[in-house]
Picture 1 (cartoon, rainbow, N blue to C red):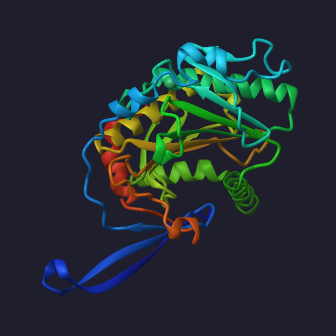
Picture 2 (cartoon, rainbow, N blue to C red):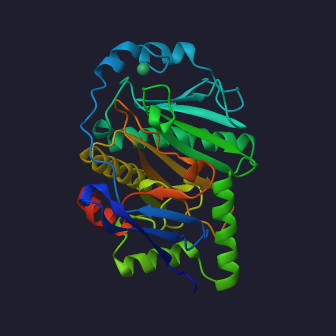
Length: 341
Ligand SMILES: [Zn+2]
C-alpha cells in the first residue's frame, strides 16, 4: 500500500515593518495529494475576519426571479418527452428542469426551495435531501434514455463569489459521456492505484485517516467525512460514500447523510462569517475502483471591497492555495457534525 502524505516546508525571511524591521520568518507548506499527486499550497497567514454581510437590499431588488414559485413552472424550460412527459420534476420544495444555457450534453438546474434567498445557516438537510432526490431522478431518467451519459457533476455555486448570478438557491446537475478534468484525474489515479496495489484507494484512505484521527471528522452511516491532506480550496471538506461510485444507487439514508454533512459544513462556514461556497459531487457509473466523492469549499465572502480568491497561482500556475491547516480545520469543524455511528 502506497498512500503517502508528502509535504515540503518553505520559509521566507524578511524584515517586517510591523515589527520595527526585525527579521521574521514566514512558513508556507506545499502538500502533495496522495492520489492525484497534485500540489497545493497552505499559507499560514489569513485575512482578518469579516462581519456578516446584510443581503436584504440585494434580496429586495432581485425577488420574483425565474426560480421563484410564481415563475418556475411558467418561465423555465421543460425536459424533452423521453426524459419527462411532465416537463419538470418536483419533489417537496425542489424543482428540476433543463438549463436554458447548458454547459454540456445534459445540463439541468434544480431549484432547491421556494425561498428566493437563504443565508448559509438557513439551508437545511431537508432542502438538500429533496434537491438530491430530484437530481437523482433526473440522472436515472436520463440514463435510461442515454446510458452513455455516465459522468455527472452535482454542484452548487452559492452567491456571486461562488459563480452564481442568481441568488435563489439551486444546483447544477450536468451529465456527459466524457468526464471533466477532475473526474478524469480521480478515475485514472484510482484505477492505477488499484492495479499497483490490488486494493481500493478510497477504502485504504478512509481506514488510514480514521486511524490517524487528524483529518477524519466522522461518519454519518456509510458516508465518511474528512478534510483532505492537500486541499484544492479554502476550508475544504470531503465526503465519500462507501460502496457506491454513482449517486443513483444511494438509498434514502445515504442521501440524508450526504445532506446532513453538507449542512454541518455550512454551519461552520456561517460561524466563520463565510457566506459563499461551492460544492461538487463527482458521480460516475461503471468504475469499480472509484468511490462517490464530494468536496465543499468556501469562497471569499461577498462584502464591500470583495477580494477574488483565484489569483494567478490558481488560474495560471494550477497550484491551489488555502489558508488553514487541514488538521486545524478538522479539529474546529468536528463539533458541527453529528457524532459518528
Ligand atoms: Zn427567486
